[in-house]
Length: 144
Image (tube, rainbow, N blue to C red; front, side, top):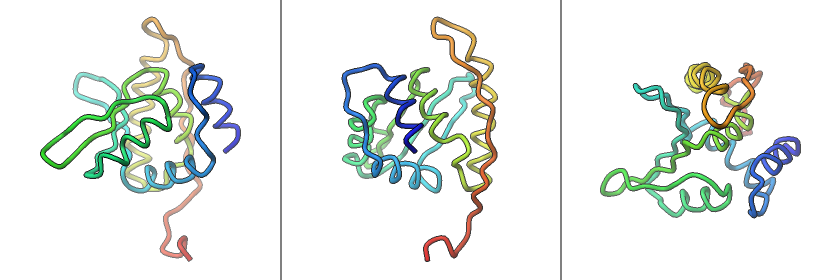
């Protein structure tokens, strides 16, 4: 995880403290199994979204990472959304090879394919990403 933390620190280049190892472990564990989604819209926009009823969790994620925004989705539902190209680059690096569920892996692959099409375009040019297939398999024994 230290290499990922170094990548994020180097890439952010903002006056923001580095998230802890415990935060990254919690964030990865929860997003790769449940609440995080890499989304490609009909207009071919890219976004990372977490939907929650607990707005305080979303603000904690935003404040800890130092990017993204929190919006109200419904009367009791909120979303943490990341659309910024550099921030998406960091999230792609963090999750590449770390997704467990096949549906999450397929969505991530679709996301990365479009991400790679957009990486070399616009004002901010990014490196293309080779999706890494996770070697982690879901199991009922993982919690023991």
